[in-house]
Image (cartoon, rainbow, N blue to C red; front, side, top):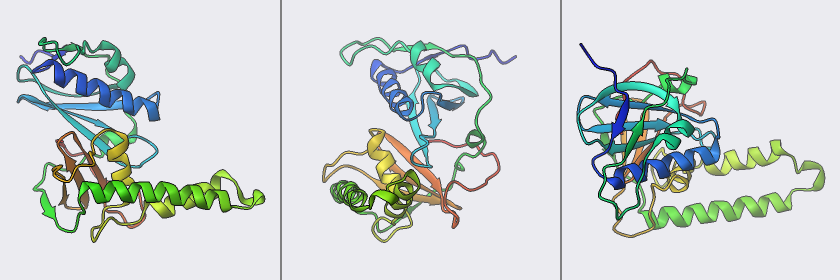
Length: 234
């Protein structure tokens, strides 16, 4: 008989602290955020979230202290409150009780496939990506200031934002908003030797960094599109 998982214990304190930081960033964009947790019986936990401002899936993988098998959707805020995330100098494993399961929003049934993931060429380095983000923010502010008073509306600002953040990165199909999401969630570092890769599987793209991944569908209409339920890993 399978015993339901009632709590999470992480491999070390840094894993718990990193997950807590990720959850905090998600909650910055959506105080009612939900996350889907998946572990396939091994030593890794994949945590999926969707920050609404970016229309992407964010994936953070944490190492567990023991093998677990679970697949649940819970409140990000309640999970953060339950975590015992010691400071980086604490050698304790960290962990916490699993919050009650919630009925997840539609995106929780639309996860990236397991693979196979293939590496894509044409992705600029992290320093170039960071510069592109700064240029995009500067351009948005300048265009916003140039709007006449009668056009300075949320609709017009959203239109400008969509135009800027939907631009492809380098020679890839990856939109700039995915890079913006990676930076905002703490996944991106502006260092020349920072390992960064772009992967594809079917209709999905995944920007992978050592701190987490950003995934989205290559949909001609924009957004995540529609996909049957699959089991994804960060």
